[in-house]
Image 1 (tube, helix red, strand yellow):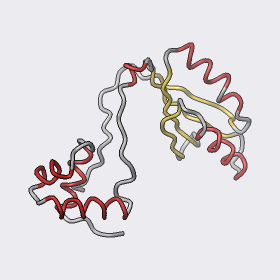
Image 2 (spheres, one colour; image 1 turned 120 degrees about the vertical axis):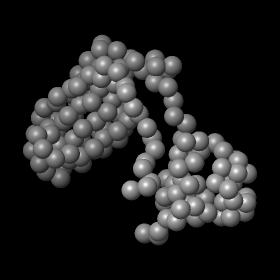
Image 3 (cartoon, helix red, strand yellow; image 1 turned 180 degrees about the vertical axis):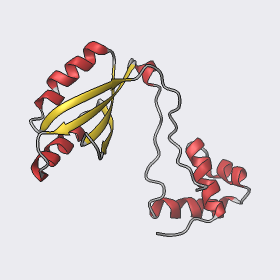
Image 4 (cartoon, one colour; image 1 turned 60 degrees about the horizontal axis):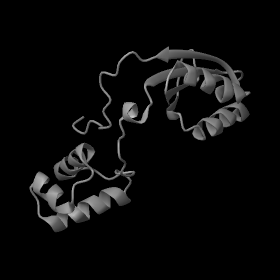
Amino acid sequence: MAELDDTDKRILKTLQNNAKLTTKELANEVNLSVTPVFERQKRLEKEGFIKRYVAVLDPEKIGLNMIVFCNVKLKQHSKQNGKAFVDAVNRMEEVTECYNTSGDYDFMIKIYVKDMKDYQNFVLNKLGEIDAIGSLHSTFIIGEIKNSQSLPLDI
């Protein structure tokens, strides 16, 4: 993996805060001229440091008022069960994040739904259809304190 110098880190930090900046605006933010910033940004994209550019939506504005973290335990640890679960979750729009975990559960998924009734429907009609699942444990979020899409670059 290529090393990031301080300028690369400044570019990445700036883009994490606002990926909509023009190359000229980005160059002003990191105190460089336009051409080197453009070339560095393209290199960071090509080398995979920048995976994609997205718009971060406000869930409440689009009616998704409930966040649920759901811990999932598979019936058995097998390649087939793991693949069945992962394939199914990747098709579910409500699931925004999925992690393979250690400990009492095999996976943790983050789900956005309208309300409790919508979550009940999701569990019964979507998760309930995945034969590989042995058990679920849901945690309902009361309030979101911090949700940063930015990664620490000074570590």
